[in-house]
Image (cartoon, rainbow, N blue to C red; front, top):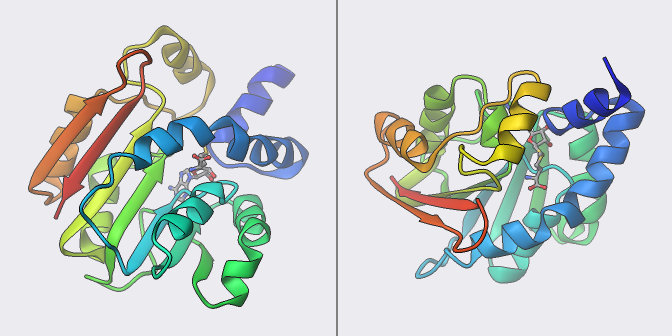
Length: 207
Ligand SMILES: C[S@@+](CC[C@H](N)C(=O)[O-])C[C@H]1O[C@@H](n2cnc3c(N)ncnc32)[C@H](O)[C@@H]1O
């Protein structure tokens, strides 16, 4: 496997030296996309947030700034991502507003109907059994709770199709495919938005 392929595969589950480099770049690399995604969060004041596949933890920090009274649990199955998220949000952890847990989205540690908002930035490409993972997200949300998915790929763009071939287990979904899986997993309202100039998509689903 080429060094580039080894490095790019670290997006799925950062591990070891290359994983450290990858996690270090995620916060800056995804900031504009995540900020655009968060503009779709209107009309809600979540008290409990679950940030899923949290990577370097920057989006967790932004969500806590956006909702200053909210408590947030960040989840990732990579030990490196968990460490980086803890470091990035150390003051929020010390103040009791943030917890970071190592777990897979296929089996979330949160209790049923415990969160008002769940978010997933640049991560659902790697989730094992999309519909089952979405059902897990649906389980931890309260009735009426919101799930935000934000992806750099709309499932058709050339760049992501190239990465899909290079990264083991990666799958870039179209908004229609995400909507279908969300509805099958128990979400009722689903709305997708496509960035006017880029292949970015945000999908908002309500339980
Ligand atoms: C490309 S990174 C994105 C990180 C961050 N959300 C961001 O936007 O910068 C994908 C992250 O999802 C995590 N991830 C992938 N599959 C996961 C799973 N099944 N359960 C928990 N985390 C997962 C990876 O470990 C990695 O940290």
